[in-house]
Amino acid sequence: MSSQPKESGRIVVGVDGSECSKEALRWAVRQAELTGATVNAVIAWEYPPLYGSIGWLDAPQELEGNIKLWAGQALDGAISEVVKTGDAARVRPTVAYGTAPAVLLDAARDASLLVVGSRGHGGFAGALLGSVSQHCTQHAPCPVVVVRAHGH
Image (cartoon, rainbow, N blue to C red; front, side):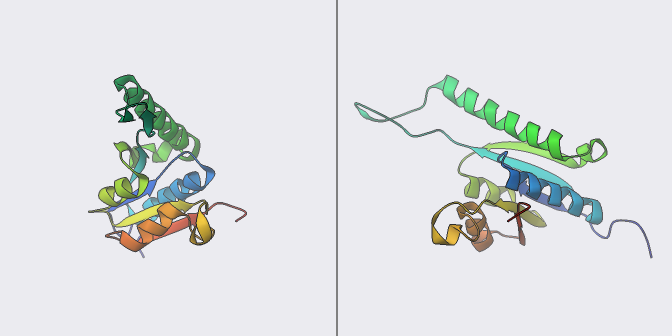
């Protein structure tokens, strides 16, 4: 038996800074070690809706820069907290504009696996999976692993 990884590929993992997403990242990195895959850690960001006296407003440019910066910092923080130094080269961070489900499904187009956490917030179905993880399991172009945080 060989101790070499069995296969290679790309694992996409959704990260939003929550404990569940950190667990998902941890799981994805361990899976990548076993299979020889790379990990694409993805965080999505979008403008908060702005409404003024003349209706819906475009967000100011500085708001775009700040939100993207904060998203990148959240992703970098999660990676540095979860990923061991020896595994850091295996993880590629991506900050993308859009809703979390849309960004993750787009990133997973040519991936071998999509990994998401499940916070379980939102409605009856959300009590079991969470809206993002539920959407991804129903629409992903590849297999999906939903990781629950410890104690859930």
